[in-house]
Length: 188
Image 1 (tube, rainbow, N blue to C red):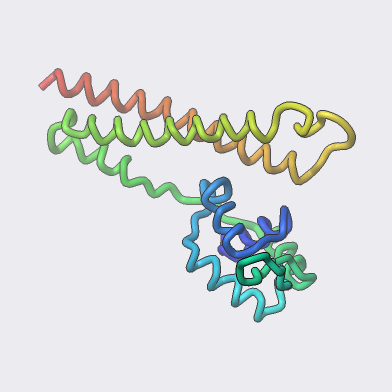
Image 2 (cartoon, helix red, strand yellow; image 1 turned 90 degrees about the horizontal axis):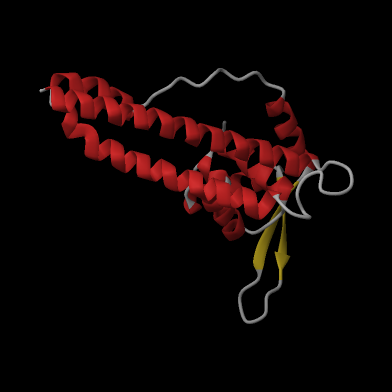
């Protein structure tokens, strides 16, 4: 996936400035697609030149005007074309998995601290996802809470649920890895 498509999706969900877009990447989209502020601004400039996005100046009190970006017809067409292209399943490239296999040629127990650190990161990410789910998808504003379904919110929620399931699966696997490393460490 190109950064262009992630930006188009974000701008279709809500137009905004480059700064606001970068914050969205840090807060939600960034868990599935990361980009630096510099990358985002570089791609926005190129997309503007290609006619994929529209830009309007928004006056601000006591500060310079800001640029607000929204998706132009050409950008919608580009996103639509991309959405209809087949994608190849991602290959799994996982440094930790290679380290775990490599531990057979060293002291398996020496890897425990790194796996525990890795597990903590995934535990924090799961907690963040769960808090976001409570904040954004429960109560009166929740999808199906009232009225007809909102496709955008429903699809945001299903992606979030995928992230939650992935983190839960990763934590279960890391618990298995830790138990195995500890068992092998005491067997030496």
